[in-house]
Image (cartoon, rainbow, N blue to C red; front, side, top):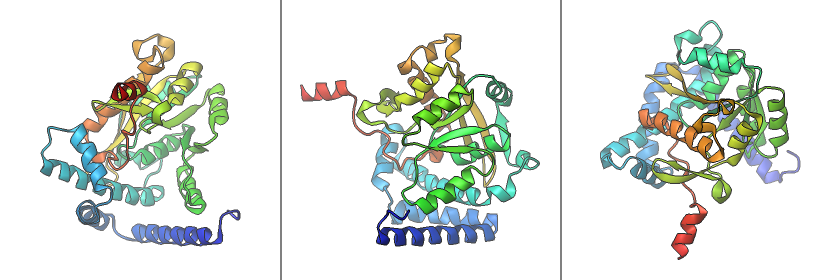
Length: 310
């Protein structure tokens, strides 16, 4: 912290203070009031402030060409409403969701297989994406007593990074920094632990290229490498909102076990395409709960570049 310029530290403190005040306000307000204002503010964010509006529209147009312009605008607005509700849920999670109350807010689909796989005396990889409330899903794994080591990028603001990490680790989850975490991940897998990863982050031109909504998308090779070299079962999970706040479906989308010799885990390419297709199928069920704001389809595979140059 001290190595950062004085002006940067001042900005960090102001941003941290603003976030903490916002969280306190959200915690003090009735949840139904927060729901109403999330819907109102979503229209402002989508249509007035136009935050990454063109990125969102381009992503939706390419991914759902059958939707009309009005339908895409509604998905864009609903996405912002979902993101605002995520903030409210994160602010209230520690107060509302406990071992005795989670059944009021959550339905688990595939619970028996989730528990059976996570209790295996083998390494495990748990995958999700920027879809639904993935923060709440990881939080719940810790609440249920499963020690999940999640890999996450550190925030640029160290004060906010510490604050977010404290929430993520408040129920037993452990956070590993994305940069330089390979040795820690290897150690967790060697000890038959469970690693939590995001499966829809762009890995750039050096990644493994798969089909995602009919377009080439790059995923990190490390995900498949970790699973295949450790012979670790891969669980793809999602947590999607059914209605209002704290009303969720936690769903096991699928399991691939390299030890079974199944086609989906035959090699790095097959495994990467398998979990990407599962995430796509989940997103198609509730497209408004995906983060269309991020540039998922950056760059093109090397072959496409060669053909373009030719």
